[in-house]
Amino acid sequence: MISVGIRLDPQKDVFVSAPARTDIAAVVVLYNPSENLLSNIDSYSDQVDAVIAVDNSDSLSRSILSRLDDGRVTLIPMGGNSGIARALNAGCQRAIELGYKWVLTMDQDSTATPDLVCALTEVLATDQRNEIAIVAPAWEQVGGAPILRFSDLLDLDYAMTSGNLLRLDAFKGIGGFRDDFFIDHVDNEFCLRVRRSGWRIVQRRDAILLHRQGDMGRVDSRFRSTR
Image (cartoon, rainbow, N blue to C red; front, side):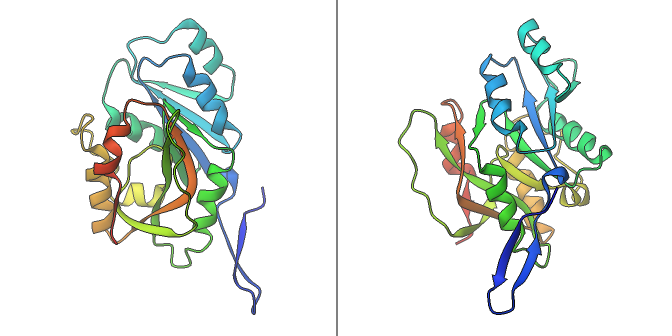
């Protein structure tokens, strides 16, 4: 797979490589999902090289289980609800074991637009100092008003987990997600350690992640710019 390139200086014809698709695995955490899960996974499975589903459910329906067991998805059963942080750690660790350098962290209710991963990786092509740990998208509520799209980047203090491209070297360096944080503030605390360790969190505001109503009320408090 050929890496995406972005021209940094037209005068010098200099390019920097972004991660190839084969460097990226998606990690999605499940908890008693609806049938929408399958179409949501379909929206990004072709944009990454592998999908790792970490299952916090009490039990999965047979129809969902049979679809996940088609060779495209690696399923990690947690034996019940272990919390979002422990599930994310399990998925990221499996990605590391499989040799991936980046993960696309997804919520079971989120849908990727067709160019989401490409748009996120293009940001990394400009990261000459390898300072970026997380590239976040902009969130748009399914059925809601379309959000305005901007071409600039924002440096963030915090970003919600779903739809992020996460550098696994940064994940390893700060010790992963704190699994004593069961659900609340998992992403806030993780981002705090990311920033304190000298990494950047950036948002590409024209890379769109679609989300169904439910968690959208948490966006404003968890999506903060350093500007």
